[in-house]
Amino acid sequence: MEILLLGGGLLIIIFAVVVSVVSSVVSAIAADQDDAED
Image (cartoon, rainbow, N blue to C red; front, side, top):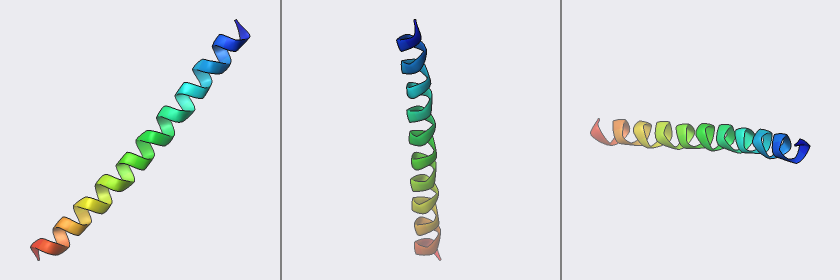
């Protein structure tokens, strides 16, 4: 049971990290596109 809880917490942490990285990359790409359009 403890292993299951630990694995679940790890998955949540990994998911949160992936989401923040993806969101940073998306905003960086969006900023580059805006600069290119101007």
